[in-house]
Image 1 (cartoon, helix red, strand yellow):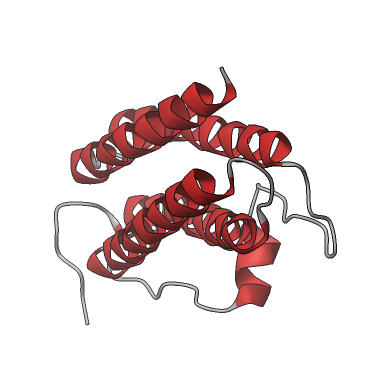
Image 2: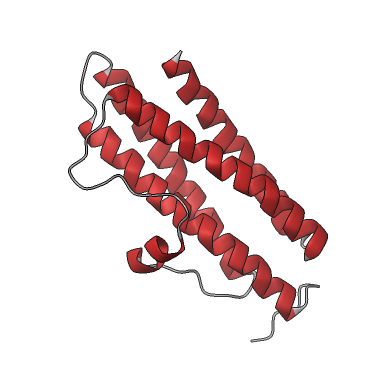
Length: 158
């Protein structure tokens, strides 16, 4: 079916190509956060266990929103781990590696900050280059969530 939303097919597809790696990064971050939730140990176990659960719940909602944005633009959302790992810019936690609680916090903070930096770049591109203010606004909303999470992670590290 033809998608007639005021964007050329080329611009619409280019925006989707920006969104797909975000979706992949969110999946990698979700799995990493869930891994840390299950495997955190030490004197801060309880609060970190709870915070990581809140964070992966939020990531799950964000994943759904990004996938739905891709669908709203008329394209299929990738849905396999093979696709996500091929597109992701973030790195998985190596198998069998269970970092300290502080290292977990630092790893998650670095990932959220990397996503924030990428989102800032992609907001400009989607708006200025491809004329998609809707996606630019959508990505702006995503920044707010990642900035709040980054702030909370920094607070645990101080």
